Image 1 (cartoon, rainbow, N blue to C red):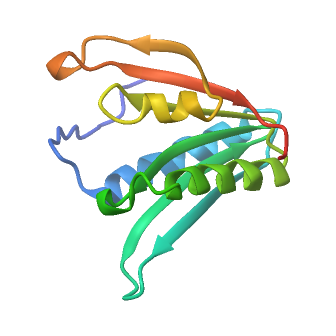
Image 2 (image 1 turned 180 degrees about the horizontal axis):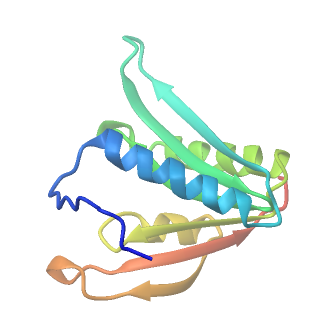
Length: 145
């Protein structure tokens, strides 16, 4: 059997559509090879009076696990309980869709204490990121409150 002719392309800062295509193919493979075939993206978005995006949270529910991908809030809105409301709403939405466990990660310069304060327990970390930062992994059992 001969090797197929392939063209290899290295990219720094690759195009978004190439990354999207890879993600689509990987998700298709994953869906075909796992027991729980129910996966959905859940999100909450916050817009100001002018319609500009000022915050949001996005996660993937795979079976009984909600993987929170990211939470962002404009700096001038932080410290007012809005981040708490975003996280709480996402947890409630995940629970309503069948999730019983939430997972997420945060860099040490982001909001690890925020997640601890909301009942998330650390279960791992990776050292060695630039400027001495760490990546921390958290989980929380969801109870539907």
